[in-house]
Length: 511
Ligand SMILES: Nc1ncnc2c1ncn2[C@@H]1O[C@H](COP(=O)(O)OP(=O)(O)OP(=O)(O)O)[C@@H](O)[C@H]1O
Ligand SMILES: [Mg+2]
Image (cartoon, rainbow, N blue to C red; front, side, top):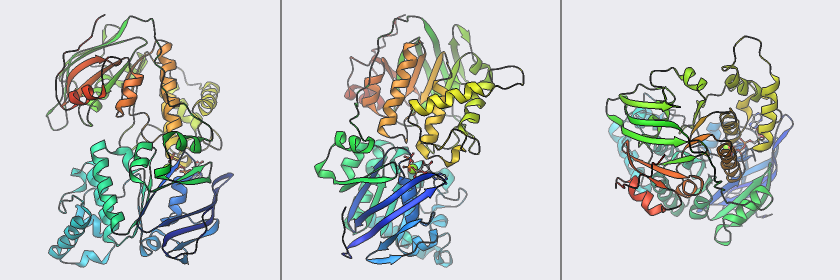
C-alpha cells in the first residue's frame, strides 16, 4: 500500500470503512491521488465505488478512517463542506433544475446569483475557454442533450473553484464522440493541476484516460496499478478475482420460422419530424438481429413502436402473422413480446425502488395471470436463480432495490425481462452501466434464450459486441435502414460507414 505524507497529494484516504447493515461497502481503504493526475476507479457492480466517492462528496460519513486534502486531515460533513474543500462530484443522475437556464443552474446556491448577468456570463465564458467546455449560458436545461447537461454539471463544479473532480460513470450515457470531448476537457483540467477520479466500466476508456487505476473488489482495495503497465485482461482479473474469458459465443440454431415481420414502419417523433421511415425487416426464431446506429437514429422509436407505446404513422408489425398495430402494450406483452430499454439516465426502468427483488419480479409475471391469488413462490425461485446467474450483489432478495448499487438494480430488471419466456425479446443497451463480467453474463443469457428459439432484437452501442453476438446486423441512420448484413461477413468499418448514412444493399432477407 502506498504510504506517503507528501503534501502534493490532493487526497489521502486512510483506513476508510463504511458499513450498511451487514454489508461492508468499504473495508479499510487506503488510497491517494496527486494533483495533476487522473485516477480510474474500477470494480464490479456493488464493489463500493460510489459509496467511497460519496464520502468524499459529503453524502455519506465514514464509519472509520481519515480523509486529508493537500496534507491536512479534514472532516466532510455535508456536500457544502466538500465544495468548500474544493471537491466537486458529477453524479450519475444529474441534479439540475430543468426549467432554469445553464447560467441559473451554475450559480444556484452561490453568491454569483447576485452578480450582474453580463459579468456572470463573462466569468462562465472565461472558464469555458480555459477548459474547452462548450456551453450556451442562456439555454434551458430541458432543451439540452445528456451530454450538454453533463457539461453544465462540470461547469457548476468548476465555477465553485473545485480542484478535485469526481465523475461517477460519466460516459455510460455518452456516445463515443461525446466521450472523446469529455476526455479532452479532463486532460485540460489535469494539465492545469486538477486531481480527477473517474469511474467507468469501459476498460478501453480506463486505458485511454487514466494515469493510475485503483481496483476495488467486494469493498476492499485490491491494488493500484500504473495504466501504462497494465492491460484489459489483467484489469479484469484483478476486478473479478479470477481470469475471465472475454469471448462471446454465437450458437448456430436450426429455427427457420419468421416470427416478427416489420413492414414499411413509419413513426413520427414528438415534434412531428420523421423518426422512422419505411423500416422493413424480419426476425426469425432463434436469431439475434443486432441494431447499430448513432444514438438517436430511431432506436428508441423502433422499440416503442413494437411494444405499442407510440402511435404509428404507417406500416405494420406482424407477430406470427398477426398485426399488432393498434394493440395495447398489455396485449402485446401477452403475445410474448418483451421489451427492455435501458434509458440514458438508467432511471425509470420499470422497477419499484421501495420493493424488493421478489416483488419486482412478480410485477412482471402477475400481469400474465388471471385471478387474484398470487403465488410468490415462482418469483422467489426466479429471483434466487437470477442472483446466482448474474452475480447480483444484494443482502437478500427482499431488500428494497433502491439500496442496491446501480448496476445490480439493472441486472434485476434485465434478468426479469430475459427470463420472462418471451417469443420476441427486444433489448436496448442492456449492458449500459454493467461491469465487464456482468456484461458477458448478459450475453450468455441472451444466447441461452436464442438456443431456446427466442427471437432477439439487440440494440447496442459497442460495435465489437454487435459483430460477435449478432447473426445479422441492421444499421439505422436518421430513421432509415441503411442495410442488413451478415455479422460474420461484415466489418466494423462497413458498419461505421452505414451508420453515417452510406446505403448498402446487402439485404439478406431470405426466408
Ligand atoms: N444506502 C444504502 N443502504 C444499504 N446498502 C447500500 C446503500 N448504498 C450502497 N449499499 C450497498 O453497498 C454496496 C456497494 O454499493 P455501491 O453503490 O458503492 O457499488 P458500486 O461499486 O458503485 O456499484 P455499481 O457499479 O453497480 O454502481 C452494495 O452492496 C450496495 O447494495
Ligand atoms: Mg456506482
